[in-house]
Length: 354
Image (cartoon, rainbow, N blue to C red; front, top):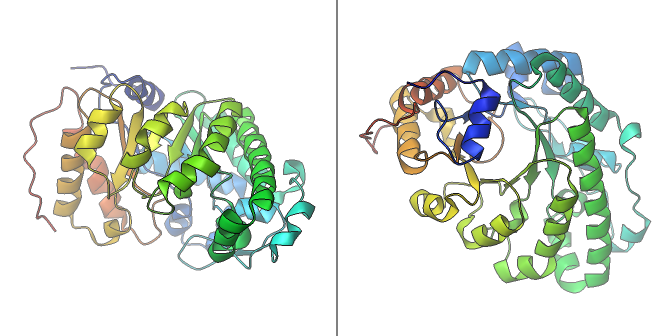
């Protein structure tokens, strides 16, 4: 039996395509802390010290192998001057697009991280987590990829117009977003983040044609990732990943977040010793999981992807929804603790558990 590892040791071993003591479990808590404390999501995110304490509590309570400094994606458009809309039980969203006309793109300025209250709160959380956890637990920061950020900056319809009909303005916005992405990622790494999740749903053919992505955005992703001064994980937010797997591997990112639409067995075979995989629990369905469903789903995923290392179990989107019952998270952690131990036991799974 292997000696029990720290979360950092466990994750690094898996990322090295070796088998740690057990499969790492990454439960990505952001707004879920507000649920645990029974307070408003907005008030929760405004208090970095409270977020740090809650992150540490959630990590211990649900036996997660990471800490997560992420708050909400719209915090980046907020830094550009955009509006954030808070709700009672869901992720804060971007309000009206901050770029009302494509012709305003040349006048858009690179945000000053030091002058953005939202970004400064994230950095305060990151520093607090690093001070508390040291090198024992990975701290995951998040940036939105340059190609995916305009969905919030412009709205999807106007962004499609930019992609297909205004190539010069598209290039200008990509250059600005890439500069911001690199600056923001490196600020989080300097504050103590272990790695950066490069959130890029538009890289998936679920969202846009592969040929279009490869032509207009993939080179920029490679250039942007190369300037981030730490490990990165490219996450396609539940979008299909297999069609762009080889390109993502070539981008030199260390980890790929995958979703429900991928053939897990095929993905594991093609990714072996090339890129680590993180996924792919359906966090939306998790809201209604029974203990039996939680166990069956986790066991199936372990049986498909965990052999030989190179795999970390997590949700497929990058956030545990507010509505997921705590007992489901306990069920998940219990199943990983029992069935994720290396060497793996033979797993028989009831696919119809509900």
